[in-house]
Image 1 (cartoon, one colour):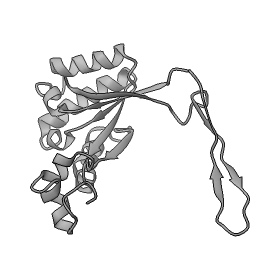
Image 2 (image 1 turned 90 degrees about the vertical axis):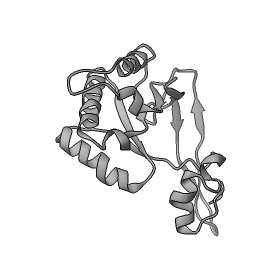
Image 3 (image 1 turned 45 degrees about the vertical axis):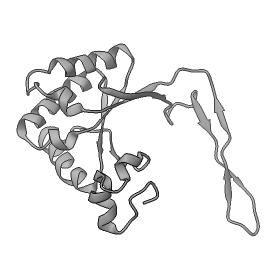
Length: 183
């Protein structure tokens, strides 16, 4: 499937789901320690986020005026399952050409019209500073493009950081870090 995980999350702006009161603890010799009591309820979270892997394949076949069947299926899934935010992977390849940009713009426009928000996921500053920023300023002119940027380095997956792996040769070795989960 094209969905790698689906996790309902609570919103900080929704006190019925999670209410944190920060109370300073007085102390004379040590720095102030904050006590954060949490109150949880059985209320259904108001936001649902889905990580969308292989988004470049899902978007493939769409353009500035139509969605690919898989992209339409993803939007239908989001609507029928009360998903509020899609976290999109593989944007660096989509935003490498005009047809990808046009397909993404149309997909996001249709999604936003139906109440969805979007998070751009990438693995380095370059992709955020160039492709994501250029796309947003070129296609959304003054209108919010992505709700957030998610910088992700999958260090917890040993096969991604081990000797000879992508992260090892691209990032870790270049900065003299060991090619393992601690690097």
